[in-house]
Image 1 (tube, one colour):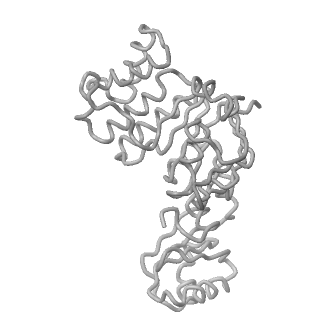
Image 2: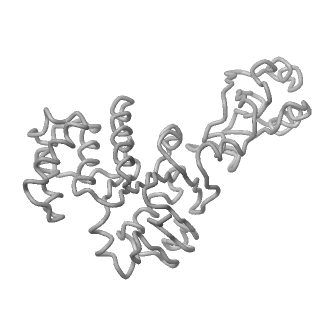
Image 3: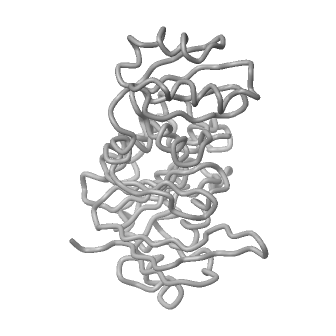
Length: 312
């Protein structure tokens, strides 16, 4: 299978801050590849290097076969980028913003006019096409920004937190739009700290933290590493006893593992946990509050690897 992106020991340092600290990636063409991690993990810095906005401190990377430092102009012609920050021209209409990017990429007027209306329709914005975007809501501006990144039909798309700040309805519209591009065999790199988004959209993903990849695989593979069973989460007041409480719970043969989360919460993996909550309550010998039971999620993978929630 052809490779869209390949990196070797890619690093970016800002003084003493190791924003990206030796990342190795091999992303196949036509895939939707997720980069999951908390704010400050190095996701955006990685995207900025791969899209040639930032020069790496060291390491090598190729995008669509071109070196990110030596052949940046070739890469820029072939990619689309929807950055985390809104990049939009408030005194232009939605249609004019998209046309401007099309013109920058040398598209023929006939082609980009037809394509613009098609894209606006898919994002439920056609009725506002001739309105100045300065009057748009944050969610509408975000959707226009997504369209500006794709109007020239790039071979590879970088979406950096594309649904940040969107309401659930707008988020689903963007998700459906991204899936449509995936079906056209366009390679998509999606950075997010939204667990549901990463799970729902990604063919494969990496979880990064402190500038390093801590695991990689399909969503099902990563969740499967936690084993069978339910995830039981609860709150306690006795924060100084958390380790002891976890050890008590682990004396039960159906409790696989336990982790403290945040200040007052504990997460356990337990076989048939829903039916056996009362047994756990008897063993831990403290009041368990706000009890929830669920199947493994990507957030549980992150907790297992780091001992904290994605947003902690």
